[in-house]
Length: 258
Image (cartoon, rainbow, N blue to C red):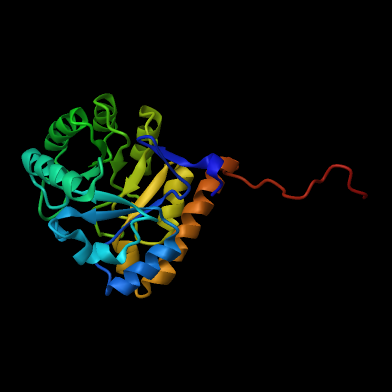
């Protein structure tokens, strides 16, 4: 995408609107190649997977840190206190104020605990973090997160890793109308068409992991997702034709010779 259509979050500017995860790949080499093909500039890492004493010895050693912006996430945290502690550790170990804030409320669905999420976000924002919260597709909660100073909101499309696609596009549309900060669809994307739909709705970006890492060919899927995000964004900016119940002739009939 052109730089004049760049994604801006927390004072940072990104040409790519696709963010990708770093887990579940069959090997570090496949991960590295998939990141390359995705065109992504932001890579999420689960803090609990990183050797905080020596990050270079972990899978982070296979990611070009001069090229990618690392977005640590608080995956597997079930309380605000645990998420806050994990975010602080990430800031110290990885030298970044960025954090994808996750506070999970249920082990089976992995849906976020919005109350604990809001509590953690308030603390981290006050401490100077650039907070990107993973939240349910709830417009009211998205607005509350914006009001306390979050840099973006990341509503789920469907349960994490489910591949179900956007289950409730209407709530996503309402969130887009409710907040002024970037809206990044997170969780539930399964294939390229899901990513394109998210962008066609007007979302500012898409974050995914399983859809790429779990594909039979992660590298090819990464490229497919890159193209889908770009196509969806262009379609949104172009302005689609309205849906109609009946046909409209695509060829003009006025002025035709009888």
